[in-house]
Image (cartoon, rainbow, N blue to C red; front, side, top):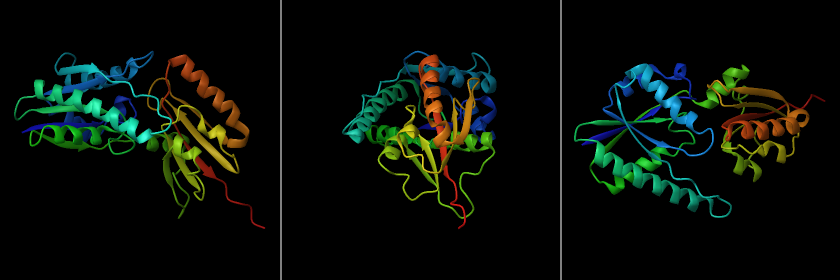
Length: 257
């Protein structure tokens, strides 16, 4: 039996790696990386290599890379598009694991953020296990997520006392998912969906490239800063070629009558 270790690396900076994650990556015989293509995307691979260099030593580990397949644009049929994308990744990973892992060895996959929160790695490895029955075990190491770091950077809690809390995507935010919730964390945006909803009495706590040298933060009443923040999202994407951002929408309490 060969083992695949999904190791949550947090938001990207080596300082966010947990002691458990360090122990896990030190136990691995080889690491696997699907490298995303596009301007600026090398930062994602470089961050992983910096972590490995720090905790394993430069040149003291094996790493196997392949090109990550692009995801097709998803309008209608979003779930079908994602399923096809996962299938492509599973096929690549399965072949790499079969070729480069010996029986009894451990392979490591460093996962940006936490593997259990809006990340597809666990689902992809389940597909690999289905394709190679009985050949690969899966271990998961949790991490500090960008959601936790966002709250820390703004020195806020993720919900009010006794209040509810929704974690959702920009796609679902635009379909009305925020209705009835006081605190809404939005992930997988990159296109300033907050500027397309009724600002009502929301405050926004926004961050991009959290945990990296390019980190930027903004906060304030959505009605006041929404347009300028949407422009900042556009400019940051133009500057880097991509953006990883996350934000919390917090509904202000209605003043007492």
